[in-house]
Every structure is written in structure tokens, then in C-alpha cells.
Length: 336
Ligand code: NAD
Ligand code: UDP
Ligand code: UDP
View 1 (cartoon, rainbow, N blue to C red):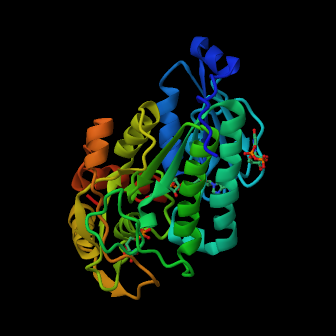
View 2 (spheres, protein in one colour):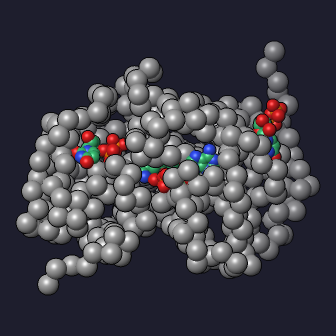
View 3 (cartoon, rainbow, N blue to C red):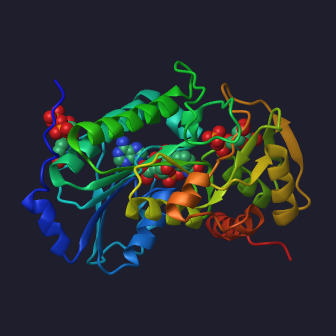
């Protein structure tokens, strides 16, 4: 039996939101790299009240220090695998370690964060009527057999590998988002984020851009993992944050790829870092890890057409912006 009933009227609570002056926005994982840049941007709007929920696994209060004590800002130590009872109008759900060494450190916890964490945030969205945006990942395409990747591609993912806690976790998170949307009418947005870089990345998180920049600054060899011909496409964090906010504001559920289509081999990336940051540094090759995707490049037609968004910062302009932040934190200034 298929119900022919019209969808329920918005609740009085939901209607009342129309008249509300302030927008209460929850950012889970807001103490992390992308989350803290998103918070900076959201705080620019005086109508926004921002609540960050983070367990500080890979993030830090330091990333948010300029907002602590601000009347429109609240920081809560909270693990999203536990229920969260607060009142909000929008949820940016980012909480999840993103770097392979961190998400592989405790894979069972990574799965819980993706599955139970997303379930809880959807329960919160259901109770409050909030719109929820999930930061999914290009990893849902696995080691892709289609290149570049567009959103219709179902992916090539190993379900039992060492990366699966992350990529299968995010795939279930996407499934949960759509089931809550279809079953309970929750307003959802899904961004599939491609490799993002910029200031505030963890210095020792093992990701390729942070590794190469820290190595170049410390006069250590740049470690290109074999074969070195594998590709990635790198998006500067300010472009990423703009894309996420446009997705949240628009009418499309997604999933929508957000990333920079400029594609580089890891050897090319190393050459660029060497030229821009330390021409003296050596480039060496080292062993790779299992299941490393051989190629990755977003097709961003949908983001362009539906969100009017495309990235502005080229890799060669973004790397020096990150260098400055890394030098500050490492306490190593540029040689004269
Ligand atoms: P990050 O590790 O800097 O930030 C993640 C934040 O989530 C951290 O502050 C961490 O402490 C917090 N967190 C982790 N587990 C938690 C839990 N159980 N409860 C509460 N907080 C928790 O990573 P990021 O690069 O800022 O990534 C943010 C989001 O974007 C993640 O969902 C990630 O999967 C996604 N993403 C990032 C990239 C990228 O290149 N950076 C690419 C694809 C997708
Ligand atoms: N939940 C939450 N905050 C809320 C409402 C729900 O964290 O404001 C959690 C709740 O603990 C549950 C999950 O979200 O584990 C899913 O909630 P839902 O109401 O969809 O499912 P149910 O509680 O009926 O299993
Ligand atoms: N990589 C590398 N040297 C490093 C760290 C990573 O060559 O010091 C390579 C890695 O093999 C992969 C690519 O860089 O092919 C991107 O790795 P990262 O961990 O940054 O992100 P992800 O694999 O999640 O895209």
C-alpha cells in the first residue's frame, strides 16, 4: 500500500523560525582544519550563532582561540557518537578524522564516528527541524575506474581494507542521510570533498601537502610514495568553505563534488613544493600504503551549474599561503 497523503505541514516551530532573527548553527568537528575555517566565515555574519561540538581527537581549541568568549560563539567538548540534545537551525556535520594515519589509528572508532555520529546528528536534525550538511569524501569513489569522477559514479571500494573504516563509513553516512530524507523529510545536503589543503592542517598528520611543506621547511627530503605517478587534485580551504556554504544555502541535496579539478602527480607536487619553498631540498621515493587510489580528479560540472561555484585559488598560489602558517608554527623563518 502506497500512501497518497500529502507531506505533513511544517510544524508551528518550523514556521516560527521564519521570523527568528538569529540562525543557530552547529558545526561538528569545528575545532579541526576545515571546520575552524568554516566557523571563521560563519562568524562574520552577525545573525549567526555558532556552536562547535568536538572531541579534540584531531582538532584543537587553538584553531578557535579568537572566538572563545565571543557572545555568539559556544564550544562544547562532545563526542558525536553520544546523543546531543540542543536547539539548532542548521548542522554542518564534519566530525571525523580525515587524515589516513589518524583514521586508521582506531578504525573501529572511525566507523562509529561515521555511522553512529551521523545517526545522532540526523536524530538531532529530525527533532529540531534543522537542515543538515554532511562532509562526505571523494574516497566514496575508492580507487576509481572512471576518470574524472562525477557524482553518478558508484565507486570502486574495498569493503575489508585498512581504508574501509573511512570510505565505507562515509558511504553508510550518505545512505543514512538519504534514508532520513526519504523516510522523515529531513532537509539534507551532501558534499563530496576532494583533497583540501591550507593553514591549520596538522603538521604531522601524514597528508601529502602538509608532509611536503613541513619537510621542505625543515630541510628534510620530500617523501614521494611509490609509484609517484598517482594523482590528486588539491583545493584551497577558502574555496572549500565557500562551496560548503553555497551548498547549505541552496536547494540541492547533492551529493555534489566540491574540489579543484587541477590534477597533479605526487612527483609534480613535490617539484612544485621544492621550487616554491626550498630549491635545495631532495626528493626521494618511499614505500606506499595499501589500497592507495591511483588517480583522483573531480568533475565539478554540477557544482558550477547548481551552486554557481568554482575554485579560485591555484595550487601555486595556495602553497605559499600555507608555508607562512607552517613557518610560524614550526618557528623556522625563511633563509635570506
Ligand atoms: P580534521 O581532522 O582537521 O577535523 C575533524 C574534526 O572532527 C577534528 O576537530 C576532530 O577532533 C573532530 N572529531 C573527530 N571525531 C570526532 C567525534 N567522534 N566526535 C566529535 N568530534 C570528532 O579534518 P578536516 O580535514 O577538517 O576534515 C573535516 C571533514 O571533511 C571530515 O568529515 C572529513 O572526512 C571531510 N573531508 C576532508 C578532506 C580533506 O582533504 N581535508 C577530504 C575529504 C573529506
Ligand atoms: N538524537 C540526538 N539528539 C536529538 C535527537 C536524537 O542525539 O536531539 C539521537 C538519538 O539518541 C538516536 C539517534 O539520534 O540514537 C537517532 O534518533 P531518531 O529519533 O531518529 O531515532 P530513535 O531515537 O527513534 O532510534
Ligand atoms: N603521499 C606521498 N608522500 C607523503 C604522503 C602521501 O607521496 O609523504 C601520497 C600518497 O601515497 C597518496 C597521496 O600522496 O597517493 C595523497 O595522500 P594523502 O594521505 O594526503 O591523502 P589521500 O590518500 O587521502 O588522498
